[in-house]
Image (cartoon, rainbow, N blue to C red; front, side, top):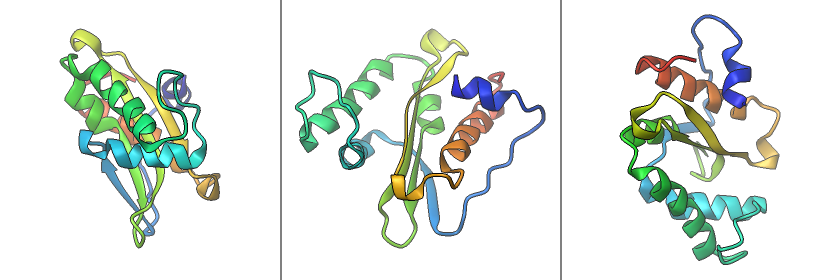
Length: 143
């Protein structure tokens, strides 16, 4: 749904990131750090995950990766997924996990998007979605 809302605007997107933020694509090695971030925010992990533990949160993130790894477009989904960190501290303030495109298809979706409460209402979530859409468009995936 988030992709559809942002996709209503016609034309190319531009994404502005303030200097105090560092933006990168997600890699599988980021799972523990993303898990820690989700724990900090009080994310409702799935019941089979050990509640309120870093191991459980890391398992939750790795499960998302495992679920999509067999898809041909998995590398593109990882590239569209975003981690936003504070430049000085390196602390995560936003995560957008994208998956989909199963069997090489063109349907991608946001599986999880979280922004630190202290950094909300600054356009970080919207910018993560726009970044994902831009990367998909660069690879010929329609809005």
